[in-house]
Length: 360
Ligand code: AHG
Ligand code: MN
Ligand code: MN
Image 1 (spheres, rainbow, N blue to C red):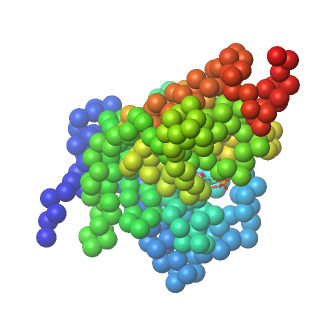
Image 2 (image 1 turned 45 degrees about the horizontal axis):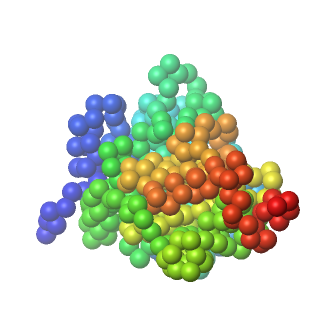
Image 3 (image 1 turned 90 degrees about the vertical axis):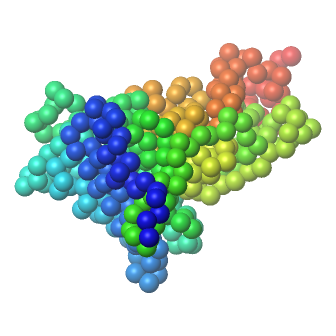
């Protein structure tokens, strides 16, 4: 039976016809990415039956213990995307250096960056995980030359496409090619992603926030101010009660925000001063920033828009505040007010050394 819904391939071909800037085999490239996600969805859903759970027994470039599924998902992306001739090179959370397309395969005009398995601490407890990807152009003046890490270091605003797969109760693909954000659901009967959530729009207001509250003592002052005001609820300056969520999987958090609004924060903290935040710019923050912006939301470090951040290294970390526009703009304002000292009325002795030692 035909469902009458648009499948992801038809959507991509129509987008490519509409936008001649999507040169070459753009739709074929995204189809390869989609195939990677379907393969990962299959592995994730088999769980213990497929012996894919547990640790791989080594660390990745971030010094984090790799799960078996981190490794398998990374291999799935490489296997599905290296032969089609659409890519000049790839980069991934799980590989220290960029991945060169084998010499026997043709090279293409795009670069692919991905987090093969996001939220992997959830995998052994059978909770939602995902994959995140970002597509950049291989600079025109570099075509024919051997790709280097520098070719990847483009701000998020240069992304041609970004998306994620969410391996939840149903498997979904959320995709933007720069013309809104679309949601597709995997119909396992026919093995295709069908357009179920066209033109997603994030509500500008919310009463829900997501943050790992166990880090509270390490947060920067503007975040402490924002969260304390949410917790104060109706009786505080916000004059409304808030709800809190934390799934520990960015894909799941962003998906919830696309569905019903909210704000997600992994701010800069003082836990480890060598790390300006937990999340990685190129394969977590930037693609999510494009997805959220294309759905009318906003993504910021607190001090600047994530899409404007110029990467300086492949695995660089960045503070992330994203979601409902009004809330993200408020948190940006709190950062400005903190920088100029205008947040003096925020004077609870619990928060920030400056307010503790004020001389008034
Ligand atoms: P990954 O599994 O790719 O390393 O990413 C996990 C990230 C992100 O998805 C999530 O928001 C965050 O780490 C969870 O951090 P906590 O462990 O502090 O909850
Ligand atoms: Mn991740
Ligand atoms: Mn990961």
